[in-house]
Length: 230
Ligand code: SAM
Image (cartoon, rainbow, N blue to C red; front, side, top):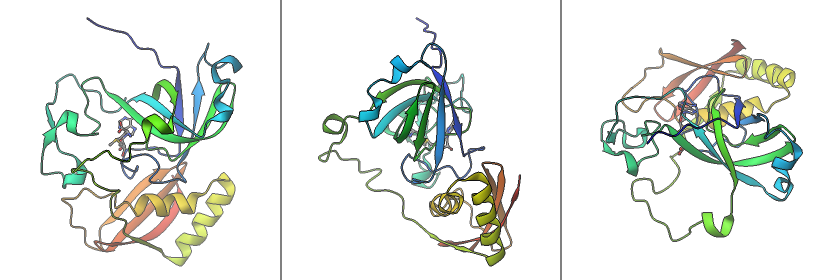
């Protein structure tokens, strides 16, 4: 049987490419976005009650990873990218129906728009549904997952002084916590685990409309080199 799903909205995100997006929500609290709801869900009735709720589940489509060939096993970055596990034991983006779920902070709601933070989602992500986070049911202190026991270890992030000044200027212009966003995302160590970068290798990614460039001083220490218009 085939079902047709229609997005209820689209996410406008600070993340313009997949690289350097945190691998789960709430790892970068400064990562902000806005869910723009489509008719008829853009009316006040659809969000009545959300003012009582701090976090929501966003059910979405991994629209930049949709595939026709089923994958039974995946190689999660957490396992170094060289060990495979069953797709149902992983939160990898390769999914049977391309569906993802993220619990994010709801900052503000108005008819047609939900401002969220702590997102791990790409700009333009189609949103299929939104549900309230329900602490007594969704927070499971007794739950165990020996594959992912804790949040990934953070690495150090420091700044070239000119890059920090550039970031401050862009943060002011955008009226966004750009410095915190860069530090929180790069501290997750976004490089593929199999890469052993030398300091000469420069990495880059676009957040908002700016390009962020950095290199690795050591495997545990990133230096931000430049922030410029994308
Ligand atoms: N929290 C969600 C889940 O568990 O279903 C997503 C986890 S997934 C590992 C997070 C990664 O998905 C991000 O680091 C980013 O690279 C990728 N991603 C985010 N939005 C995407 C999209 N719309 N299409 C494809 N990949 C996306």
